Length: 174
Image (tube, rainbow, N blue to C red; front, side):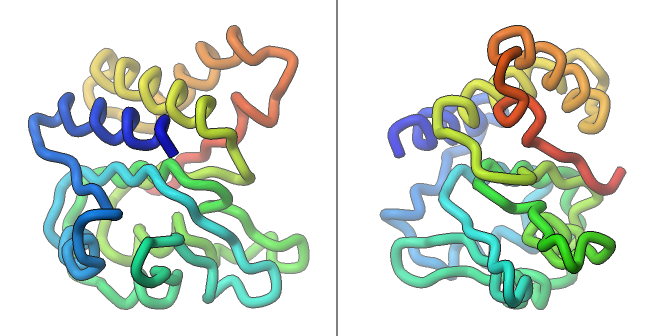
């Protein structure tokens, strides 16, 4: 996913940190980061399990990371997790009133705000949205909900005829 690598690099550069390349680091490094970082930006593949939302997962090179495993890592005090991965806020139709999805798992870990996606998003759209979001976040005094609302309006200008592109990202938390 070339766009995901560029997206992760851009997010890390904005925060003044070195990005983790999950193709080159151990799974344990990511799991540790869940409880220790203030801002987390993940750009990778994910899949929602419609039959068993607790097994929805991030697709990692060495082993998948499920909702249940992520939610079990409670104890962090992160400010914002940006999940640039498909279907992280997806809920099956028969469980629409329940929040069993990867985005919710990051609330349980301890992030006060989480950005996720409601459905699959093309790689280039995800990269564009992440960049616009980071710019918007800089202008709204670190208010991720407001930054995402601005992002949707700006990305809509570019992808106006395709609401599946500009309306996919969703904020939960504060």
